[in-house]
Image 1: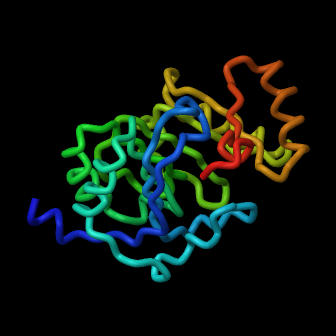
Image 2 (image 1 turned 180 degrees about the vertical axis):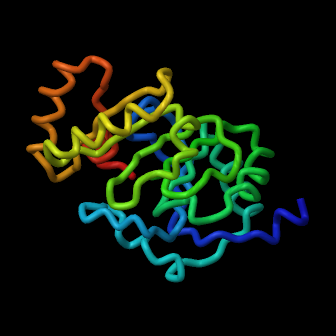
Amino acid sequence: MTAVSTITYPVVETFHSLQGEGRWAGSNAFFIRLGGCDVHCPWCDQKETWRADRYPQVDASDLNRLAVEHQPAMVVITGGEPLLHNLQPLTTALRETKLRLHLETSGAYPLTGEFDWITLSPKPYKPPHPSLYHQAQELKVVITNAQDLAWAEAQAKQVSAETLKYLQPEWNSPEGQTLIVDYILAHPQWQLSLQTHKYLGVR
C-alpha cells in the first residue's frame, strides 16, 4: 500500500450520487472526476475539466478512503478524459474497497487499470484507440444531429456483439432527442440513455 499511496491524480471533484446514464442509471455511485482532456467536444458540459493543472493532486489512497466512507454500490472514474492518466495504481488502491469499479471514457487512449464495467463514449473529435472497442461493456454515443447517428453505427460495428448500445441526446439538443426516438423505433438494437441526474437536479 505504501507504493500506491505515493501516486497522485488531478481531481476535479468527488461526490456521492446516483449514476444518471446508461445501464446503471439510478444506481448508488461514488464518482471520481479526474482533470485533463484533449478531446474537446464543442458541446462538452465539463469544459472546466480540460486543464489538469487547475486541480489539486490527490493521493490514490485518499481516494480509496473517501470511497469507503460513502459505501456506494460502485466507484465511477470519469473526467475529463481519465485515460490521460495511468489508472492502474488508482484501481489497485480502490480494489481494497471490494466495490465495483466503473470507467467512463472516450477511449482516446489505451486502457490502464482494472474495471468491472467500461462505458465507451466515442467522439469523432478524437476517435477511440482500436484496443478499447472490445473491452467495453457499454457503448454510449451522444447525438446532436443526423451525422452523429452515422458515427454511432460506425462505432457499433467495432464493439462486441454483447456490448450494450445506447444513444444519448446532447442535453441542449431537442433535435437530438427527436432523432434518437425515431431512430430507435426503427433500429431496436439501440437503447435510449438520458442524463436523468439533470432531470432530477442532482449531481
